[in-house]
Image (cartoon, rainbow, N blue to C red; front, side, top):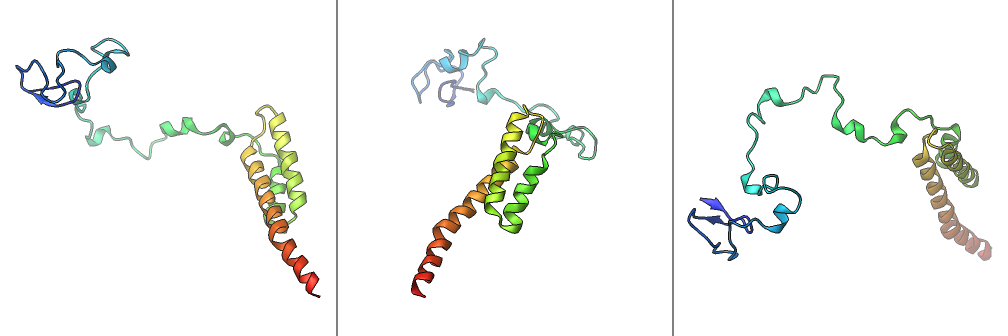
Length: 156
């Protein structure tokens, strides 16, 4: 038994035409040979699991000190670049005291300092979060609180 490289239908060994797709199974499809030599382009049905792939000796030890492959994909901001104090101040003003204008100004200043540092300072994501939170608070106040306060003042 063999497999048609075009449609993956099982074929008898003596078949010259696939009964499913009506193509010659001896001819490799264009997608299988365009990237390199025909020996490199293998059909999925020819894949075999490597010997011993699921043996306990092949599994990585989670307690060793070897860094995992995911650690190389960390963003540059997480790799020991200092975050300026002004970023933390803008977040504290935003979340803590409700100083929307002060937090917004501090966030914008922090963002400009980080961008002008040419990668020496981290915390750009935190500065953007502080700016976004301040803008959300400011929009909420202007759209919800001020009109309801104005309406209450008119009824007095």
